[in-house]
Length: 389
Ligand SMILES: *Cc1c(COP(=O)(O)O)cnc(C)c1O
Image (cartoon, rainbow, N blue to C red; front, side):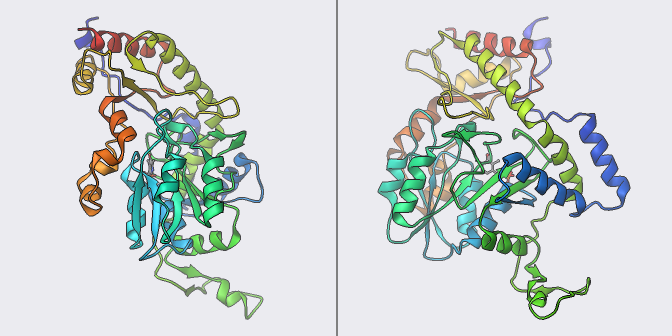
């Protein structure tokens, strides 16, 4: 077969099997399609997966919603500053603006492309209230250093763990670290999916209570509890102008089955990353960093960077890969280049040399569990030929 006649290899595809489909059908037949018993079961299963009963898992309809609830519960508001990485998806930062606080974008570590602890330290002002690290591509940010900075300055930490299921940082599963709140995403292209969805994790009961109230319209039954032992089933009180961020049971049904497979998915992703590393060795590329000995990479993304020896620009490289039927992407166009963020905070590329340099040279290659070994070989061949002359 010549290249043009081969089917397009998408950048990402979810792996949805018979178990997921049966679980969703079961939900549809049950008569309970919105938030109900399966969302509850999904939360319980998630805490069990994390293996720490002191954690509470709160299902939401996106990670963006989860990040918003997290910052709201922490009391972030006008006049506050929240530090995060420029090298992320806009969702990480936009939630800060929802609450009227300001985003302070900082540069990344040039090897991992995760937020650089030294850059956080430089950005702290008397207005700083929180840090949002992102575990870029599925490799943990330097959490020991970030948590130490937060402790020293009395700052809150909300982990954007959209890429990080399951990721280990210094021997600990992300979700169980000493941050205040961690938020996972189950968007279609993440390491597991519910179509749209997310999970908030915290070990602080007060924060959990606030996030659960704000997840659904600011409704609470707690106030009634204080005055009488038996709360009538129809009774609720509105204690705040909350949001509509609950996860449906249809989505939770998918999540219940996907979660059972997440460790298997991760193992397959490691195999695929190893195969890509082997197939791309010797080319003018910086291959993705590996997890340290006490870490684990979720391999959500496989990001390569062209070196100075490459004879092709990043943009032409991408065109050539698409021409060979290979779907690729760029993670990310840094926020400092996006008109809204650039203009609001008068940002220039010179302020973010590591993110900027990485962006100009980076391409995310396909890596997902439905890829075959032959798909990997095809990607490697296409990369080789795209780099040639
Ligand atoms: C996908 C993603 C989000 C948003 O997740 P949703 O579930 O789509 O809201 C946030 N941050 C990062 C880094 C992401 O990749």
